[in-house]
Image 1 (tube, rainbow over the protein chains, first blue to last red):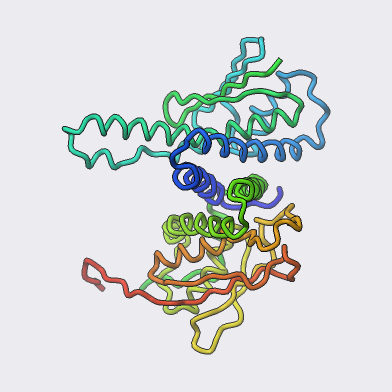
Image 2: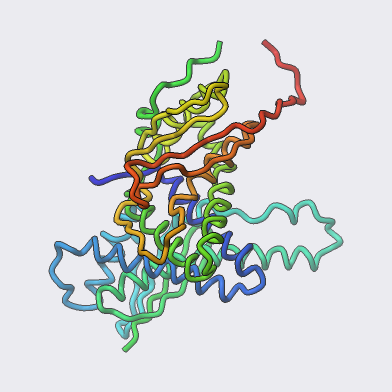
Length: 176
Length: 186
């Protein structure tokens, strides 16, 4: 086993990076913040998959590579595997993590609780904001998956869907 | 009586959840790289890394106090030792040494010979002036502020700049007395 750091180092760094991009650098441009966060993830995924596949033979097909992401790669990062993998056999894969670590620390902003109940519209926006903040946390892992697969020679688009916190699904669409 | 502060963070580090350091190191590297692209000015990157560290430090102190089992430090000297031996170890898995105290005991150096932030890192010539590890100084400053110590934290030595170690100078500016809303029951 190589060098280790405490899990909270990684978690704090990721949370702060997302917050810096969303609330400070691109506070009024969430789509730009999202693109930057994804780019950081892409770089990390690209480098990690390079390192984790050094002693492996080439993957024979897309499914083999995706399985590697679900098992070995995910275990290195999160100490658990992806819980469920689905595919339509036409280049789309859905990777479901029932307890995605970077969402276990996400909580809904408690401030709406203090607002007057009569102000329902503001409650709705607060909920919208919370949903947006949560989705911001998913651009980083989406970037990691895209970077890892692209390093394995598989260009793709990756998006994420939150079903029931902290469960989450990553949808990988391989570009033909 | 309060338990004596542990002299080393080994046991604490052994008990916290740990992960492969590569993810941490590469994520930090990717962040610095993206900041350099987005903010353009190296000075601004230094500033933002420090700010990120500060924001992390003010939160991390809670986990530190909860898990480390250290009790109140009697003075700044003891505080510095605890950061170096327990704090760094508990989070980064490395220990710093405390040296170069000034005469009145308000500033000292934390020296790191090993630093997981910089594994695989080399700075290109275009990044002269970058304090690559500036997030660390922010963390220390933020964490200390939460325990009522206003400090100034600066880099003295940096291996990425050719020095033989990483040296953080920590200067105590002001110690804000804590006021409790409750009585100290003994």
